[in-house]
Image (cartoon, rainbow, N blue to C red; front, side, top):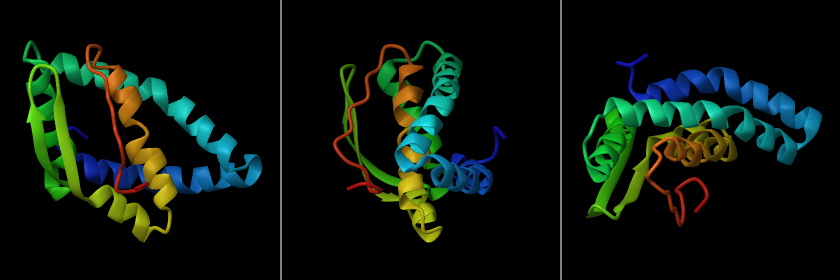
Length: 141
């Protein structure tokens, strides 16, 4: 699925994950179900982050982060402004998010946060030298 934009991959994954998570919530309650999903997907996202970072080669951290944002924003999935790009920080302000719009249309914005925003943290852990700080998301405010 390397040539499929990440937004389209997310939509394909949602066809399976949304009904599964709804069933888990009914059986376990929302908090436990969401914790299980985060745990189950965390290692996979760390591995994806590590592999992505390694594929990008010996570029600077800020260049690698820029390429990552371009990948997540491909196919007009994100509109964002780069506020700062230095060796110490890469800051963006997302102004429009098709991931959020998609999950809102499904009637599941909370699952959008769980499946599209929460994985950012383990993904970035896979990058190694980079730390993610986020003050808000479109899905959560």
